[in-house]
Length: 79
Image (tube, rainbow, N blue to C red; front, side):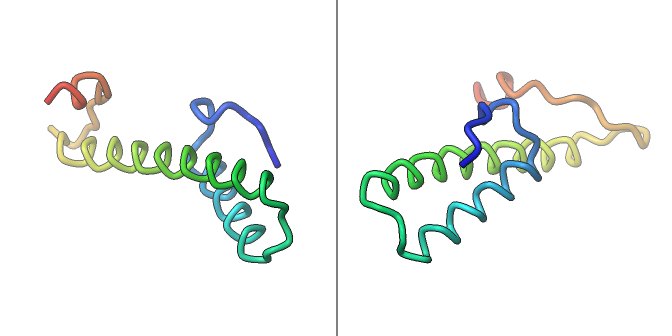
């Protein structure tokens, strides 16, 4: 499996890896330790994707004059 740092991944890349992890786990051919590692990586990927989707939704809400304003993730988490 790819071990690219999750924080550096684009949404589509993270989602594709998550789908691959789910597929491999559903196949039932992973050993226990590999299955646990895949589960942990999958959870991290899922959280990363959810955060990126939340950012995108917030940008849509912040539309002004037809232009997107960048959203500071730290400001959102403080709310």
